[in-house]
Image 1 (cartoon, rainbow, N blue to C red):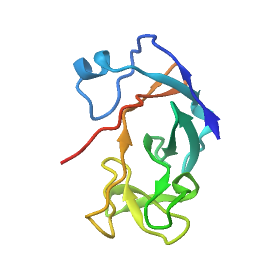
Image 2 (cartoon, rainbow, N blue to C red):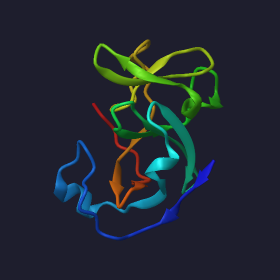
Image 3 (cartoon, rainbow, N blue to C red):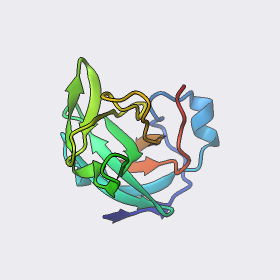
Length: 137
């Protein structure tokens, strides 16, 4: 598991899905090198006491989502199968195979279940995460 270090430097690369003014107000934590997470795979990271799955799609987009699988009640999401369902980037739990939308955390098999997702950005080939989870309605 990767352990994050606090980093407050300014970045030119903003987090996808966030307004640039939102990014400036967030506190970012440096987690690991981009090359530490292979395309089409995940890696678990401990960010301020929270287990977060960093997931890199085969296209290279990085997402940060809770590593906790609510169905198996285990911290295993980072070990899941990365892919897409109908164009939606997803990761499937390695235990019972429920899939989660990497952008929103919504379970694609049971919309009443949702994982926390975290803002993520790449700065100088480093992955940075905001430890405050985002909620999507």
